[in-house]
Length: 259
Image (tube, rainbow, N blue to C red; front, top):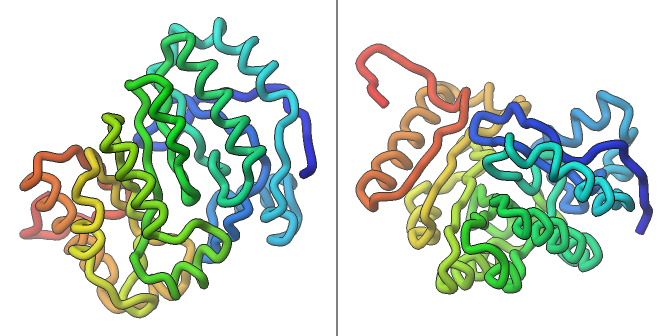
């Protein structure tokens, strides 16, 4: 494992459903190929040069020190801290990263700051021993394992992600699922209803379309397609009294369509 130092840890996010965030790792071992926006930005700003460099994560060695300094500075401004937008707090098979994530989340909880957590790895059951205000989530774009091995080659199997999330749900934590980046049928033939049924226990669902992939724009009427799928997600959440959020840019407004 390699290590780096940073000058800051917490930052105000511009993501439409976020507040503050922490990124205590550079890179991500899951190796998503759709492509990954976080990797694209890291390459653009010179933090990494290649895909191979990106999937060799580097831990921010002074992350705990930075957080101790920043909590008093930002505490009154923070509603919640998200783990993570540009890396993954529980990379599959990386115990050292998971342990650091748990320590950082505990530090924030000790200061009465809620954390939201999102992973393509496996959520540890120890999260149930931290604040009951925390919200634990997984990213899930399919149930097709062959597709996962191609699109997210080093991530946790889908059923394993779902199983861990369900166990935390049973322990009383608020759980959520980010169904994104959702592909068009020319990339993968699937039914959103199957995914919704598999995660029907979750308290909240976020849905977002696949971006930065030429095959999406090549699919005829892809905008209408994402509208239709978004409507199915909204209908499901309303029927089952769940919170939901459709990510910015997923829905296109057309005459006669209401959302």
